[in-house]
Picture (cartoon, rainbow, N blue to C red):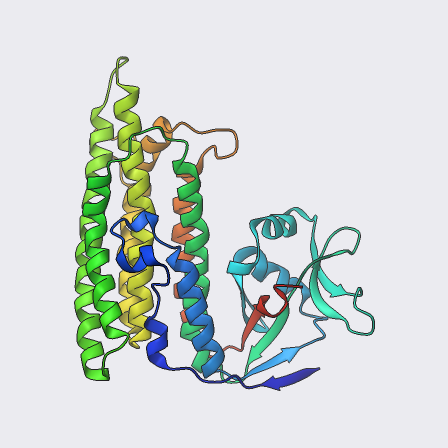
Length: 358
């Protein structure tokens, strides 16, 4: 029913090689750089694979409901243990299809003599193969797999914020954007130095990198609150649409940058074995999101996100985005913290990497 797989170790410093493109290494505009979540996810998967032995399950009977729940939500906790889905490789179409009953979890009969776990459509046609793996030693993988799930969820939400930002017609202020990117750039340079340094120097460089990331996050949290206040101050029947769009574009950029800063800080703290610090950073992010979601502004009429929602130029595909997505971000953080608490449970991983090109 299962087979034992051992994967080959890699150098720990390789996990710091997260700047892959020329723009990542030399550019000064954070939003023009790569999707670092994709890089974080790949590096965590590498570390998880090299540090962990897995049992691979070919027969998933009895697990189908739990697997479907994990793919729909990113993870699931049940009597069998904790299941985490390779969320970065399941498209939104597959997730939505499972939620709507268009797709289901089963085993593919399309490969003669070899049943494989798969996502199938209503006609039992193959949509996507996957593999169900169980960690032989759950304690060795719990932090990595929880971080993997959280980064993949943040990646999906961050890309949706980028997409909806295209609806705003505000003029891009590149000097402002670069000013808010600078601390990330300074941190990048320290991380690049750390990737080739001795162990002692590496820790010093990473501490300096985190200081820059902390300062950059503080600037962004301050800026988004200032932009919300500016939006609240634009009142009356003759309020300038151009002024509103300009502020909304700034808010959108801040909301894209913040998860990148948060994601990198969490990644680096986990790299350094400082899970408590990673949790603290997520707690600060959670507090900022809750403030935007729940705290009424000066006149007591709207929260910050309700005000953004009221002024945003939605189209029919993204109506209510600013009311719904920040709540999903909060759910992601809650889920991560819940996952880290599952210290006595078996850990399963729903992996699609092996069959990505089939």
